[in-house]
Image (cartoon, rainbow, N blue to C red):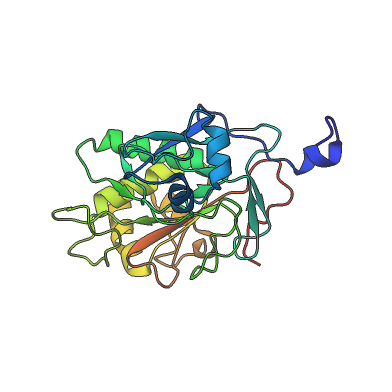
Length: 274
């Protein structure tokens, strides 16, 4: 990029404020660099460049922390196009954290800067509220370079994430997605998580099955006035329903789908699918 080129400045998103200039991930087993690169969705050569002291011919020991991302202000993460037809440039990986669970296979764990910062803030605040509570189950975001991620229609631009619902009963850590109903859906904790996400002010839409919206609405009603409820929930139907933050989308009875806003200053990002 040529310094001061206004055409480039207009198309470059503003990075979110915060301390995540570097992201480290931990090797989950004794593994070769090439195999780890495949599991993490990053080229082995890039892992080597980020970790210059690494012996590329030796197995990486379980528990080794490796640098997987360093913020480059000249080439920040950038969402391009719409969630269903776009791509992601220079995707930022979601960091590991004590309050949430990443899969060991992570090629689809990348997002825009504001998406990642918002998720970390929300997850950390939820963990502070429930220090002995369940770990948040993280599903798919996007590939580091974005694009199609079957079987999803979206998840292409680094602004979408799937998050498992919090359920009642014993959490053995084995069930990532679990179908929810009135008996096993923990309305209090799921509403707390939704609140933390909304308070980041980076959420565009949260897709939650209508039957679960009813349970969340009942919980939220204890805390919010009617006008705020109408702005948040599609259910029950009000004049505000088409514009509500929480919408029904078929297939979301076992996880919520959160879509974040385009980055400030990014004219190449399209908020809607069409």
